[in-house]
Image (cartoon, rainbow, N blue to C red; front, side, top):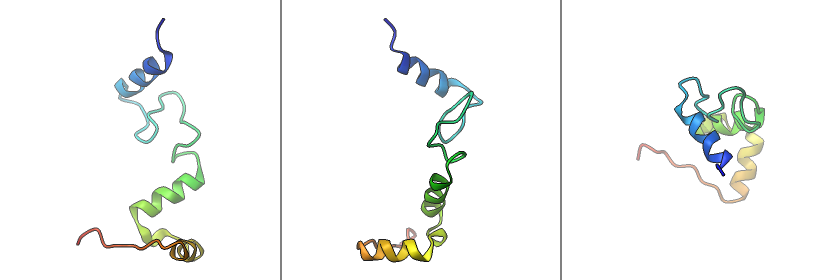
Length: 72
């Protein structure tokens, strides 16, 4: 019996038209950046920490999160 998950993932990775974020061919996964605004926000923060809201920066600071310059 074939493993449907492995067949599905292989067909997604082989397609030139797959989404670069979730590898969806016909439709995007629910957690894909193209569909979920919360995921879009998190992705933007990773790409540019300046996109972090002031409220979220205070919360993260209180939890002990520190930001470093990646160029160093």
